[in-house]
Length: 169
Figure (cartoon, helix red, strand yellow):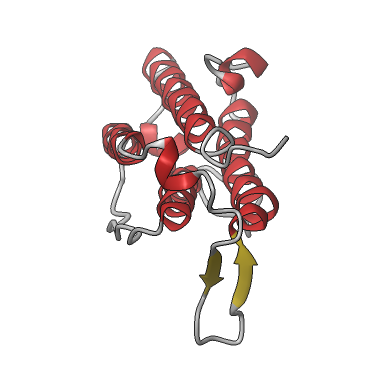
C-alpha cells in the first residue's frame, strides 16, 4: 500500500497549526493573568543561540505552506514575517491555514517522484523526490519548530501539556 502524500501533509499541518494557535492563546491568557508583558513570551528563547518564539512560529508556518505548495507544484507565497504580537501570530496562522486548506488531495497525491529543489543555485542546493522531501525533510523541520514554540512557552510557566500540543485529531 502506498502512502497518501496529501494525508501525510495538509491534515497534519492543519492539526498542528490549530494546536499552535491554541497554545499561543493559553500563553496570552497566562501573560494577562500574571501581568507579564507579552514580549517576554514572544521574544523568549530556549537558549541564546536559538530563534525566539515569534520566529519559531513563522518558520513552522513557512514549512506548512512551503511543503504543501511544492508538493502541489505551485509557487510558494512570500510573506513578510513582520509579526510582533499574539494578534499578529494568530493572523499569520489563519492565513497559513486558509492557504493549505485550498489544496486538494488530487494536487498532492501521486507526486512522490516530483523533484523538489531546495536552495537552487547555491552551495546548499539539495534535490529530493516528493516523498523524501515530505517525510525526511519537511515534516521533521515543521515539527521541530512547532515543538520548540511549545517548549519555549512551557519553560516559561504556561500551563500546557501533551494534549495541547497534539490538538484535535
